[in-house]
Image (cartoon, rainbow, N blue to C red; front, side, top):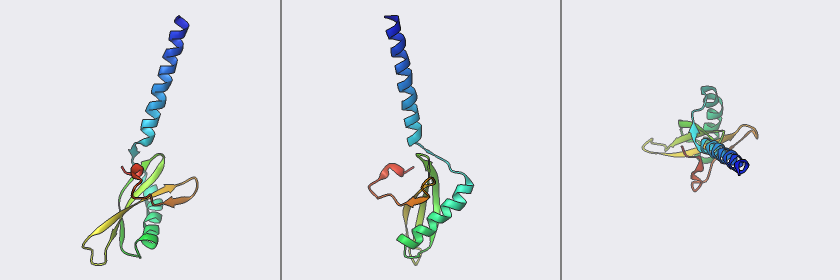
Length: 109
């Protein structure tokens, strides 16, 4: 019986550790300034070219989520009276960027 209790305790500890890691993985964290100056600028230019018809853009926020840098890019209209925001997620391993769908809220801060 004592052996079963030890096994159950080890299993419970493993579940807690895995749960904590999963929780940490989904939380946002700050990114380095070097990432912001390189990946952030690339995201900003990509969003301006592909989704904003060359309108003025600016990085308004940045964070790391699930290990990837995420940038919030503001796109200003021609008379600067309002702006829209887009997210840009960088996959450093694949060397790609993506703009998540408005229905994909998992990348939000």
